[in-house]
Length: 203
Ligand code: A4P
Ligand code: MG
Image 1 (cartoon, rainbow, N blue to C red):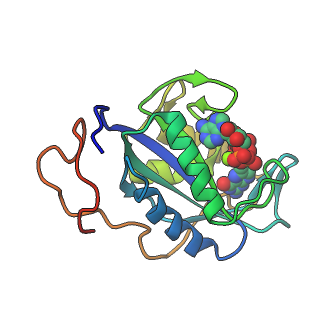
Image 2 (cartoon, helix red, strand yellow):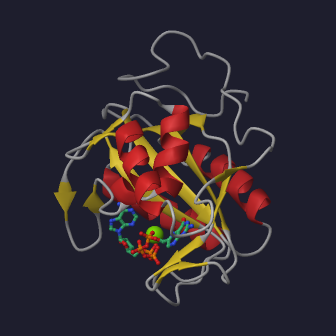
Image 3 (cartoon, rainbow, N blue to C red):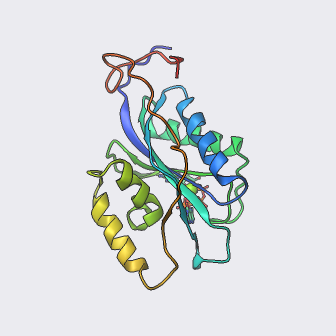
């Protein structure tokens, strides 16, 4: 397939609090990289976080594993979100309660700094700026990152952790796990941004 579109950077947050959470996150990163027009650049470590529900933090609900991946996308944000929904379905996601338990949640946090709000897609993600379970792994993998309209991710994380202090249990526990993703070997000139590159290169 020949694409004339540029590859643009995007940030995807992963969450799971049902089933084999770690294996789901690992499979999801592989599945995201396998999407035609998407390449995983970096993945954070895995953190464990108490479930945030519509009624607040629920220590009795199964805890989440969360992580963030940085990708390059030749798809539009809408196309990318549709692909992420397909990956969620592949991993058994059933939509019942909003913010309810789930095998896999994939949120599009940022897409090339775009700002938009339609019925199906809000960018940047409207709740990312206040969620340590997004900000912590994002800052760990991209320390100088900024969230459009909100400021530096590291500063937002500081504020999120400060407001969580004294309320819930530790909001973020780093897991001592194998890396979710190992960077692919360089594919040579033009492999990073702005150019089409063949898929199916040995990983
Ligand atoms: N949608 C709009 N903008 C976006 C975007 N930037 N990324 C729409 C992804 N989706 C976006 O999402 C509902 C609809 O949001 C989608 O159809 C899409 O068109 P959903 O995934 O079907 O349902 P949801 O995830 O239950 O709802 P929501 O409001 O997206 O929840 P969040 O914000 O994703 O929060 N606690 C911990 N510790 N860790 C977690 O990861 N996640 C959630 C879900 C709640 N509590 C959590 C965690
Ligand atoms: Mg969601």
